[in-house]
Length: 238
Image 1 (cartoon, rainbow, N blue to C red):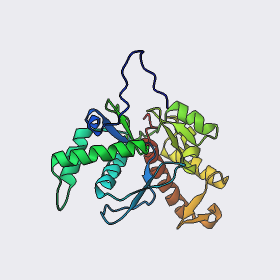
Image 2 (cartoon, rainbow, N blue to C red):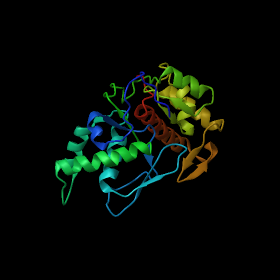
Image 3 (cartoon, helix red, strand yellow):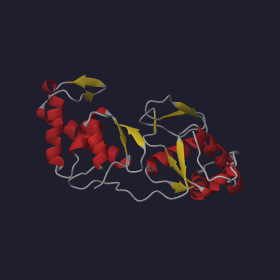
Image 4 (cartoon, rainbow, N blue to C red):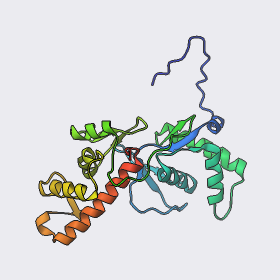
């Protein structure tokens, strides 16, 4: 990486955990656990993964809880000292003092930043829509990217993220002109034309193998999940 700065400016190249108190912390976009259901446990390892990257094992229950919380509030970020307060209240059993927790968390977050699991910013993230309107609308550039067949798109924060099959196919249609009924019809057409795959009990199924009621239930579920993904990944306008 290259850092451009004014001539004569002294650059401190040391990574000092104490500087963490200046920053707002956020999960990297599209960061997820490798399993849909996880439980924070000091004896269990949880793997966290970005798109197109190898899973990274996290053994510390403190850092597991930190990353899960940051994923939950994304695309929002949180001021470091506020994160310390939150984690201090979440402790169970033997608790760390606030100064000890602050020191440990600062060191661990610096490591997570170097592993590109979190991002740091000097400012709070602007408020973004977290729920969709009756006529869901995604940001225009991401819609255009998806319409060109791209599965990696840029969100409202200028971050790159990888879309799954259903999301990339549906995104171009979130133009503010299609309500839920229209989107379900679009999804059905995509399934019938085999542009997207329906998975039931971890098995691929065809429309002809499903009853009308079962297909409608699955498409409604997929639509809800897809709209949640689009909102959570800062791709939503309204």
